[in-house]
Image (tube, rainbow, N blue to C red; front, side, top):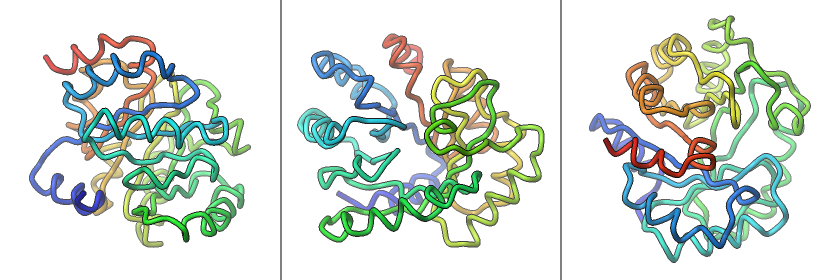
Length: 241
């Protein structure tokens, strides 16, 4: 398979809108996976992300093994912990939680992952991960013991994203959190996109086609949707309209 990051850059250059469906191994019932994947494969999805804030050990690897047999879409690990790394995926978002100040999630977990990654031919994509407040506490906050950036301080968000780019990150991921009350504001997306030159990924709180379109219009290169499909599988049909 073509390198995932290289393919993302190529698609963005062509003006294509990328859509990743996030599958949380702890929330996906394996018995219903086949039906779910039929709808996913027929949708506009371009990537599959796999991961969650808290996932039982080895469950991610098992899910990815199954997914590999039922889809040709690239599978990218969106890890909440080192235990979620799998050699069967196509790529790994090597996340650094730059919005927080917990050293474990800025660099500690990444160092821990190196011994695992040495044994795998897995494409690693360094990603600056920014958690933005959405109106309620998220699993990411609880697990990492960090606070999100205020959605009202757009300059702080922009500066954090630009600093991540200057540090050498290959993607910026703005995250409102799973089941967010509010998706990332279009003003924030637009402001960040205006100053960064690397792929901009937006996730959290998007539950309608209109919100998806708004994110793309504001400058998102890739949008990630998870909870909307967990709660309403017919959302695939809405996307295809």
